[in-house]
Amino acid sequence: MSEAVVDVRALEKIYKVHERSTGIGATVGSLFRRTWKDVPAVARIDFSIASGEVVGFLGPNGAGKTTTLKMLSGLLYPTGGDATVLGYTPWKRDYAFLRRIALLMGNRTQLVWDIPAADSFLVLKQIYGVEDGDFRRRLDELVELLELQPLIHKPVRQLSLGERMKVEFAAGLLHGPDVVFLDEPTLGLDVSMQARIRTFVAELNKRTGATILLTSHYMDDIVALCKRVIVIHHGKILYDGGLADLAERMAPYKVVGATLRDGAAETDLSRYGELMSKDDAGRVKLKVPRAEAPARTARLVADLGDAIADLSLEDPPIEDVIDRVFSGEQLLGAEAEPVAAR
Amino acid sequence: MSLVATYRALFLASFQSFAAYRIQSLLWMLFAIVRPVIFLAAWVAVATAQGGTVGGYTIGDFAAYYVCLTFVNQLVLAWNSQEFEWEVNQGRLSAKLLRPLHPLHYAVVDNVVFKASTLPVLVVILILISISFDARYETQPWHVLVFIPSVLLAAGLTFFFNWIIASLAFWATRMNTANTLWNRASFVFAGQIAPISLMPGWLQAISYALPFWYMQGAPTEILRGGVTPERALFILAGQAAWLAVCFVAFQVIWRRGVRAYSAVGA
View (cartoon, each protein chain N blue to C red):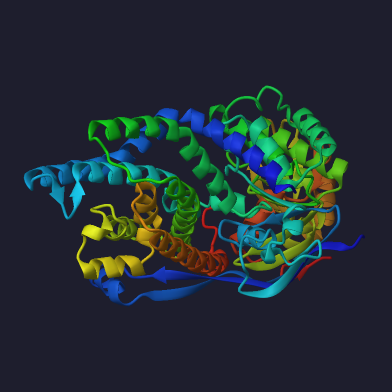
């Protein structure tokens, strides 16, 4: 693995939030005396990302994902700890650093609304000091990958959300950043546009070797793009490792899928596992303890024999795993302490 | 990065944006004329009632003063604090902070484009007012020469003073009060309500000590003429001193503000 381009050590961010109770007394009281509460958004986290990696940053709302991304891109000063990105301390916001990174946030605009994106691109070219040749090459690539040709000469305010997101992507990447922070890049987009953005991000990583740290609520984004995920909850890292290992580490069960032939549909399957679903076509899904999965599957096959038309043994869907982590269910193999699989 | 090339690109983009809102921009400019014209009309009424002069000012003197004040106001105008509050609270500032260019530069460009684009119309209106009220100017060629640095200093001072107020948005959610305070202070101390020489001595002393008169009234006096070289020098020195103070204060406040910026909603 190559050298770390993102290195985070005991990074911490505590917001001070004004707090008051409801009611007239509390309202009047707050005029004279304000009560502040410390809200830890990021609680001394550590991780590092190697050059060219695509890492998914997972967590529910308020977990600390966006705050971490903002600190790493230099928008926020941390309360404690340290971080380097490409060897720079992000919050010093050296122009040399800003020229090498991008923070793209879904549903947020950085383009001038009243002029065509092509004109904003020219402004960004000058601001970032991009050479003519590099600018033309990158713009051509982005126009091709994102199918921008019909969009860049229209005023930005006339574009749909999905179209605008694509144009925003191009604007954020024209300077050829080495590290790209993507915060909910597919937020609010329809399914086909989400897929297109995903393909684009994968292609960006392949073509430019850019290091990408991505947050998303959509597991499809993470599954399609990231081999490695960092799971953050209440500002702490719960898991840092391979996406494939996440289910194994954090879900205590596997899913047996079977299609039963006519006549076997009414069979009592509770001996083999907990029934998750069943449909009219005879397809059933059983939840079985991970450790006993092979033995129970074998027993199911032995007992039902020809009544089984089809059989599969899988990890639970990653969405379910993540959902269980965030909802605080007791997990087999998942300790209270952060899990580092790497 | 070449700052000249960046400015060229920013000017082009800003001008295109301006073109999209040209009617609105012209209306803003016309609104800015309303207040001084009302004051002019009031002083003309008072002067007429008092036999033609007030404190040595004839109707023609008042007309010249308010025409020059309107012209100066337009040249030194700064309005960032209103927009900046919105940019901070909506997180729009984040995109600018992430670029290798100080957000101040965008404001400089928007400022210059608005002024340059509306100035021709304003000049025509001011010439018509001058003719209508028979404005009496005492301007010598050297007044015009001194006016150029004076109005530039005034514009810089107003711009940085406005950015200091704007930067308070890093800590306060609503900036309207600070803006209103500035407007009211300008009203009294900048020479809008009356030329400073018509005010009581104590009010003149306060006006000389505060920055507001150096933003508007001072360059207005130079342009209207009638100031001595000594007074012109006093004005330029006061403007330079206040500009230096505001520039340093802005640097300090901005640095702290960016640290405090919580990028809410960004």
